[in-house]
Image (tube, rainbow, N blue to C red):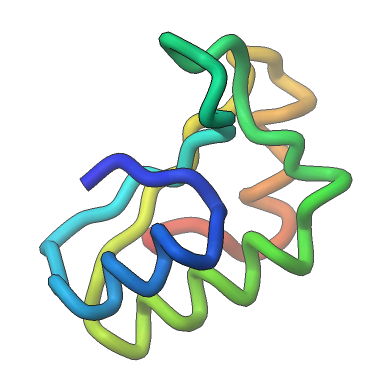
Length: 82
C-alpha cells in the first residue's frame, strides 16, 4: 500500500493491515509524487508513523530523494529494516 503521511491514510493502513506500506510525500492536488519525503523536517512524524505500523507488523519503506545525503538520514536515525 502506498500512502501519504496524512493521519487519515495511516488509520486506513492500520485498519487494513497490509504486509507493506510505502510512505510517500503526496498532496491531494498532485497527479504524481513530485519528490521524496522531507525526512529532516518530518523526522518525528515519520518516526511515529513507522512505530505505529511496526506495532501492527506492517513493514514500511520510505519514498526519498535519490541523493546520498537523503539516503543516509533514515539509516542514521535507525530506520533500517522497517
